[in-house]
Length: 402
Image 1 (spheres, rainbow, N blue to C red):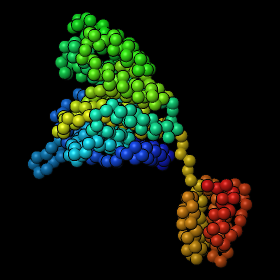
Image 2: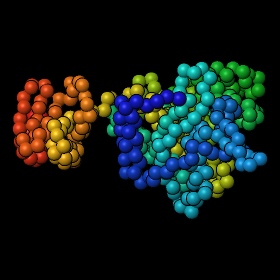
Image 3: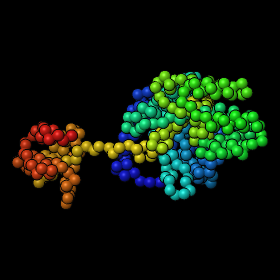
């Protein structure tokens, strides 16, 4: 895990602020789940893949002579599902968002084991428009950060699972194959030969196809629907989302090899890329809420990875820093008031606590009892004297200081 330095935190807060403003503007409410959750939340429902479960930080939370195993939060959506079940099931639709850190063991020592992310979830409703709403929020937030262009990649977990079920795979085998496919190893399909040659050929074909329009989905329907009617509902959903995104002027690529982190996804999966970086992703998880004790309800969500975005966001412009000096006790008293006025006007007012070097400050405000306020421009060496805070602000504004 790593420290976040002041320049990192400036970017972090900018990302957080833009994301919060976007979510609030779309009617989402902010939540925060505990860093510690019970392990059974992630195991009893079978919501995390074996690979992910093998990398969680877990330990016993002792209570006298007994204890229960807990984990550092490895995922953002599953705790939100629990929170929804415990607090929001009476609502027809719950729109929730968070900014939280996740933890996962990483064996090489080259990557951070703490990951910060911004996430949003919409639980309830019955329309695929919810997925499009989430994609729109993610693109709006990233756009406000000046990051782009952003590539949207679409896949569909339900469609892929239907194919694998037709091959006669067990639930564990299916999860393992999907995990490898979405981790960038579609070659695992070669290990499935001999189960159902016709379906194997169709699956290989599916993974070789990519499209950028609703017409692509219609072509898939003409190729696969007659031989595999179970795909119809998945294709309908994917077609509707493609139509909506096209209508909004949002470009995308349908690519069935994308969709990492699929564990609990049941429907459309979407990912966001920029400059070859995976900025985040999400999808539909209609079976998750019942798995954690809730009712049968549609749900979808996404996360943006703050650590990745920080590498793309430009340096945040800092407010002008002004060094305030007091030559004596009476000047110190007056300087407190001047510093307050400067801060109210949007400047950073730092008191001189013994700086030996002041070159990092362009402006110095020198307070002398009975002699007014001296403003020193260290760039030009010019000195100006005034007797009021209002006039001081005027001098700074005339000099183009903001």
